[in-house]
Image (cartoon, rainbow, N blue to C red; front, side, top):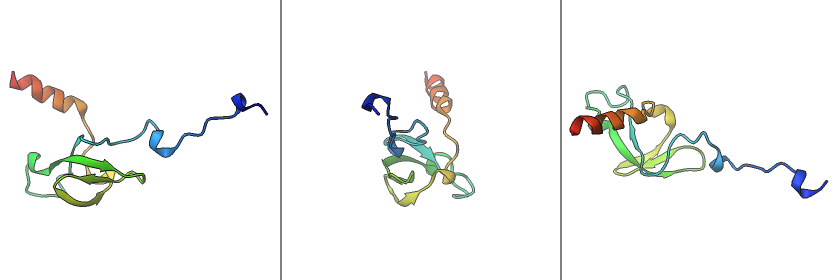
Length: 84
């Protein structure tokens, strides 16, 4: 079979469903950090590991997607609009 008919293999790191990227902000769910405000539960991603877990700046350990609130890109945009 000629090479141009073969399917291109996609590595897991190249898939479109990656939930996090370095330098993004993520917020732990309130149940995980009770009694803390949203700002105290928000951290910046340092590294995304091949297994889908992340390492944060200023917080020890690897963390999975289920520990965080769903990412809402509009929340950050709305906050910037209120500052003007």
